[in-house]
Amino acid sequence: MIFIYYGLMCLAHIICTPLLLLLICKQKYRQSIPYRFFFPKNYSKKKFEIWIHACSFGEISSLQTLIQSIPNQKKIFLSVITQTGFAQAHKLYGNMSNLTISYLPFETLLPFFAPKCEKLFVLEAELWLMLFAYAKRNQAQVKLINARISTRSFGRYLKLKFFYNYLFNFVDITLAQSNDDKMRLESLGAQHISIMGNIKATNPIMTTKHYKKPQRLIIVAASTHANEEECILESFKTLQHYWANQDSHTQCNDSFDLSANNKKYNCNTNYLHNKTKSEHIAKDSNGALFIIVPRHPERFDEVYMLCCNYFKTLRLSHITNQSFINFDNLDCELLLIDTMGELINLYAISDIVILGGAYAKVGGHNPLEVAAFHNILLSGKEIFNQRTLFECIENYYLSECREIGTILKQYKQLHIAKISSTNNDMIKEILA
Image 1: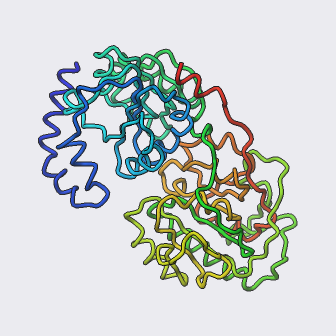
Image 2 (image 1 turned 135 degrees about the vertical axis):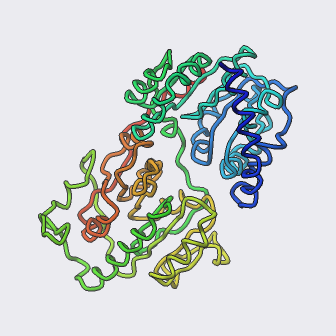
Image 3 (image 1 turned 90 degrees about the vertical axis):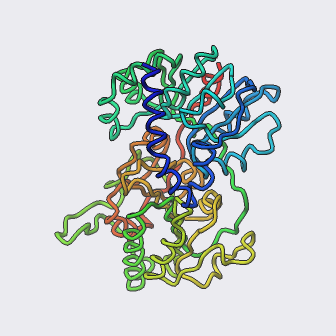
């Protein structure tokens, strides 16, 4: 079967070449496509003790504790798919003398350019048959770690069950994020499966720069996607108008209106998950600063234009001394973050975080960093890629995007999120 598959991939590579050449014109593919599909670096003569493959920015970031736990004398090869993942890999691990970073060659080129290794660790759902088969041909141990199959995508995988049954013949051990993932992977043919949780829970949560905590209320819309920003901006505008016409000390005692039909919802129980005792925000809403952080840098200009339709907006890149920003003195209603790597620093000074990627059907984003800095945490309901991480959080709110404004009108009654548990044995299990 592998020869048939390889032949089909070669045919697909040839047919798609014109499209790939066109995509190179886009900034987000300008570097990755040439290195993956046309001119990969040649590591075929090299051998590493450990090869780790991850797709993009988030997965690369989640590897920090794992990589730091590998002895310095062991050589590591780290392969990625996306440009943001490649840049983040260099930012986090570029100074490590025992680690090499490269784009993963496409499957047709991989047997001729990829290195050999003793152990191959592949993250999440990066199910590349030629990668697994190449590693096993060279007698490597192959582990699929942090493995997950979302409910939303499971049906698509099942349609190719015969293929994944064959692919998992080349995987020695699978470490799944949850019991649900374990059952889905087993139904696709995975063997020797155990549950490890989510590797992101092992990462240290630290800021990269220190901002002074503002006195004004800070609301961050983090890692937003297309079709989320407009809805969030509408909610911000509703809140701004509502707070301007309310006493800043107005409290919600029992319930508030959710919609025009006057159906009553309790402030503290509806939308709230994993409720425990918690503190509340005391800041007033006067002069609240809204901050939006788009997930993808190629959308910065587009989102800026959208924000300008709603608020007096400032771009972070237009601030001359970004290391010493006084958020209380910013002459704007909304700040657009159009530089990379700032989100963790904003969580440390914010009060409320609206976590994107789950109002659109993207699967959600990592909530641990939000909770680590004791913010009120709101997210959409489409958290199918992050359920194991949300299980580590106490006091978070899930809602439809149109309900954000209604919930935040009474923000002083909302519970602050916090981390409840992590798995400290995860790294040992991966490296064993």
